[in-house]
Image (cartoon, rainbow, N blue to C red; front, side):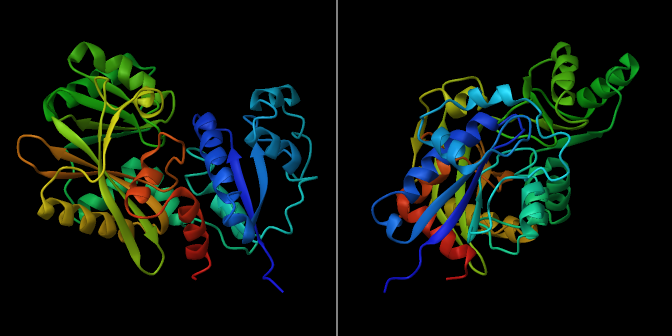
Length: 354
């Protein structure tokens, strides 16, 4: 008799500003698990969380993944669960064997979903609560990297400032001008897919950029912008971390913003055309940074490579990178010998320590 198929609990959507990206990622992963070879080992039970935080049953969730219904039709349900004590009421998830959360951004990538799933006492694909929270929070991540003297661009941190106060905005503006060189990037500490980020090239643009970031998070990072190449490295593993080929993204826009990541035809080069010594350094820093933040399972580590000096700067770690058809993470692993069907199976095996 054949082994019993493992049931994968695929969680997607969520009440974050990366809701639609999560749906696109989940569609790719769902198709990969339903490939001919993976259907022999796995079955998928889908759980869609709408923008109001309501969990929808697996039948509706699967219909969204196979494009039978649009996810926006669920908006009419509104906040029908608000008065219920158990927000999972009516959601049958007892037969799930392994969780595969694909919630980008808030309430997912920040460790929230990992904390919830821990109570089910079932393994999940990806890292735990601490690694997820640290990977999502740019301020904490950068602080830890600074203490380890890992190479980063110059940056400033502003926490819980009242940007409704014009004097506060003037004070922050003065500090940015004094301590950083233009251009600078103003970022919310907790966000993803470049949402809430602005490139600022002069003093007059600072105020609006601060307000944009503050609209997402009261904690803000301001980074010095250099002339760089965007370099990315995939990580998978548990006790042992493996690195993918190194990739480079060349984008058509002024900087690598949300539209660049998902809507435009960027030039992806894998492996990146860089010196072998730099490749080795990038892989070593990728592993070191993930180990430092207790990140395992899978992640994408992003770097800047300064064009004039070839200096490496660690940018950030994404603990639930995109799996869309335009996403770098699955492309990096395809170039490293794992197609998307093999990759999702490998990630489940890693979660089970196989």
